[in-house]
Amino acid sequence: MKVFTSVKELQAALRKHKKKSIGFVPTMGALHAGHISLMKNSIKENDVTVCSIFVNPTQFNVKSDLKKYPRTLEADSEKLKKAGVDYLFAPSIKEIYPNGTKKTVKVNLKGLDKRMEGEFRPGHFEGVVQVVHRLLKIVNPDRIYMGQKDFQQFTIIGQMIKSLRMKVELVVVKIKRAKDGLALSSRNVRLTPAKRKWAPIIYKTLKKAKRIMRSKTVQEVEAIAMEELGKPRGYKPEYFTIVDGHSLLPIEDWSDSDYIIAATAVWAGKIRLIDNIILKQD
Ligand code: PAF
Picture (cartoon, rainbow, N blue to C red):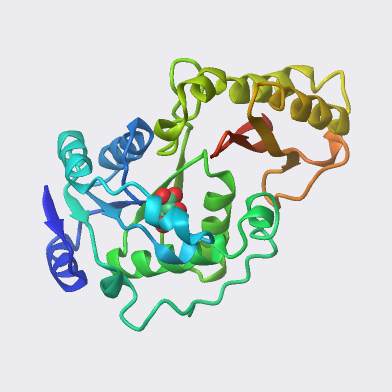
């Protein structure tokens, strides 16, 4: 695996693969098995796989979170090598934002960034769009791989690709879970043992929502889920919402959409966890 920190050098290396397909996996590092499954999908479907590790300052609305974000480049690099990734791109802030971090790309996100996570993390998705746009311009891949766990994130990136008519296919990879059902996330290691013990309640509640949806209204399912998620000590659900999977708009009735998801964000002590499940798909 070759490691690059400079845009120019990465692009020079990629130019040698002009006729080959390129798969790209953007990350912020602190890699776990969920990331590795994105890499594996890309490796299977492309001639060359590029992974980026860049802790993007513009998507952190709380500055202390940016400071605390785990930086584990050496260990990450070993994992990527073992997985079979061809190129690792680990640039500096200056390399990604040579003219400063002021937002430049304008995309009509159709309000997708204002709901769910957007309500609680103002400006977060603008930062994600800015960095993914810049990375796509640098790498120019045939396919970009993103995880289903960040449902709103991949929906927004899909909208960006569509609205800017970018020539890249978005591939969404299924959520990777621990044996007990907790969705894998870089944040899981920061859970205290007591909070970790109860964390499977999130996926259990999502599955329960799917089980009971035939006999309950949308509003009843949301209320039951919010109650369940608030039961363990120190657990506080921020939202549990049932929405159309394309527009991310809340639905009133099960017949309102053919593509319905339930998404949730839960505070487990000081750690905020998100997860989702597809309830109905056409
Ligand atoms: O999901 C992430 O790790 C980040 O939001 C991403 C897509 C790499 C952009 O910084």
